[in-house]
Length: 145
Image 1 (tube, rainbow, N blue to C red):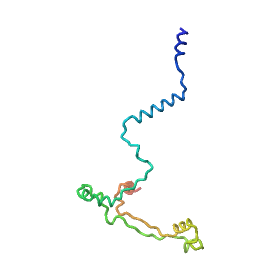
Image 2 (tube, rainbow, N blue to C red):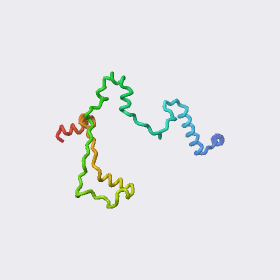
Image 3 (cartoon, rainbow, N blue to C red):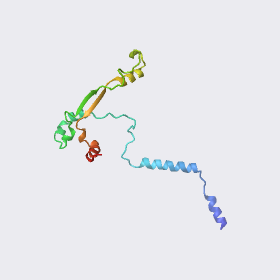
Image 4 (cartoon, one colour):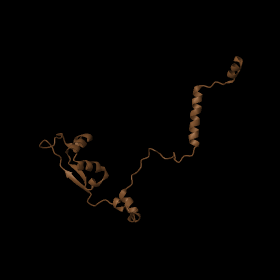
């Protein structure tokens, strides 16, 4: 009986574990590539995509949008966006800036000085209180929180 086991064991071929791993990995790659896939790999994932120009889209599809039952959602109210210029409040009499001529300073210093001295430009949306992004704030205000 012991000789039968030895005869069986001598017929087995020994494989390296690295060869087995390579074969399994190759089989998995081939089976994935052979299967039918809806996705195409020819699309570059690094390519930048230009956003849609909303106003241009509306003008190109105006005939289709006139009959749309949800047209009221697409239109922005004329008075929704307002822009104000708010002067900066400073704690000194004048802005503290370098004594050298601004044009002689390095570019990053010029940008820094400009950033700290120019007035704020504020964009206000009068219809924002009706948006879903402000619904949580409305609910808290209604509850008195």
